[in-house]
Length: 474
Image (cartoon, rainbow, N blue to C red; front, side, top):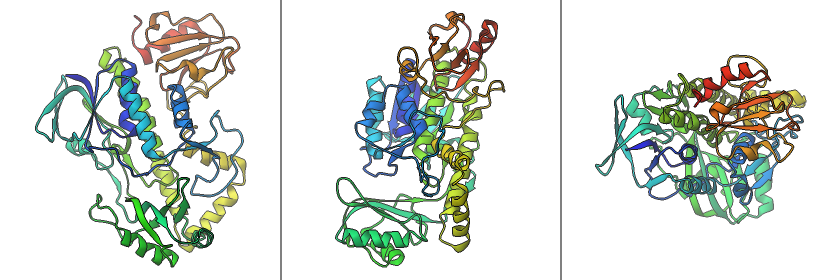
């Protein structure tokens, strides 16, 4: 019997496995697909996800394979300069193909001791007061204390739980692929620029290693969501939308995605939880999907680990739903808005022009950029100082920097006063005394996910807050 089974070996599942392993939790990841996918659905990481990688000491691996791009133009594709005043030391998008992201995150989980079984499909589950029994497609069973469904938008775990998945069904499919083309690059660019005047979600983009990434609306919504588009289908749609198929040939891979927008009614049923696309699906506009799932995993990991260890305070595991469900709902709303803003009809184009004018105001530009990057999220932790509930940027210390002290995934008391103590929680909370820290408050208590749980300088007040997040003193 393991502590946690994670269904789904994509980015959400592997990040969760790594977070659990940081706390010594025994983890088994079961993944249906026998081999990693070559499909590049996501091509970048936003600021908050980059911060998380930095907090866990992984960022250098990703920087070595990715390219930094300015943040402007990610809300509905409206090109504006990067707004000033962003509260992050990583004000860029890290362009990196999802297969590389998957590989790096999988390597990290395995390094930390997670077991990953590919070609292993979950087909049934049952739970009782002591644990969860998982049935696999090969007829075997596995037993764990908890199960987390990270198995995508068509999640088997969610369906077996009979959790409602309300929202809007898909009304439009988009074909996506990487192909070679024979068209003259200058002529291709001119045609694409003309088409994008009305069809913002259309694209034929050159790739660094040759070929092009093609994005074009499909003729309708596919009945079989797993059906791979054909080259002829892509050619027909390019001719219908752009008047030419650009001579596309030799696809490396082809895929499709829809615009369905849904969210699970509950993220937890007893000992089973949902994260990533199993908990929410939305159009990929703005590039938020992979990032949202990764951030779900980091919020959940330390809480579930505390529950497994028997030291979680009352309500800690339920705070995962309380904190992440509203965040997911907000992403669904902003993608709904972006889809409307990128529609080709005259009314939508008029609203888009108006919003583009408003985004010339830096406050508006920053507000919308913070939605995409997830840097302005503030969990409702009961009021108090404006920092409470927010994640703390990577502040400089007298020696080093904050994120360099967070690699172990523990809580952290950043103390400029030198008068505070977290001695009873030394096995869970690191105490960093640094009078030179670039911190605007005397001290801050950070949760393992980097969000501020308390600020102040009163020891008795601190002792009231430590048990809320880290359980009873040793």
